[in-house]
Image (cartoon, rainbow, N blue to C red; front, side):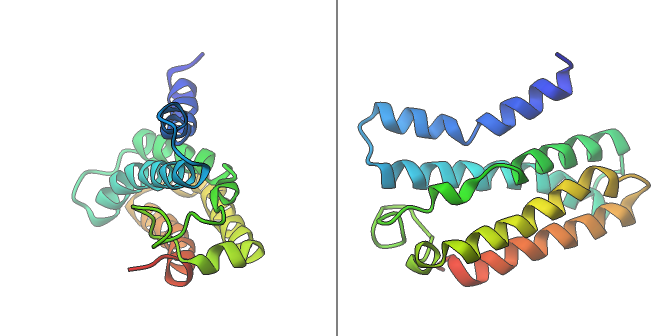
Length: 156
């Protein structure tokens, strides 16, 4: 297996690790869902941050590195995170949750917003090729999908 593929697979499985640990600790399904959502968001952030640094010029543009992070984002975008939007896992219902209860009540909209993320991240690997300006455009597209969901379904 090529190293990049192993890294992508490991990153895709990373959100499941807290779920497995939580399940072993006797956590409820709602608590497990919160842990998975946090792991997922962390994995997204860990791949967005290096791209943002390139887009801002804080680090030099490196096509191979940009493409690796974009591929990771595409893999994460394909993950069906909405299955972890469980009743009883919202802010005020489970410690550490920032999800508003409206997300559970509007799962079709959550799924549509996630589809927009999936589409934006699927385009990312090809989109980051060519330089800093391309990375910035990809981040704007992906970030817009994040904002659309968080503005509506994430508590402060």
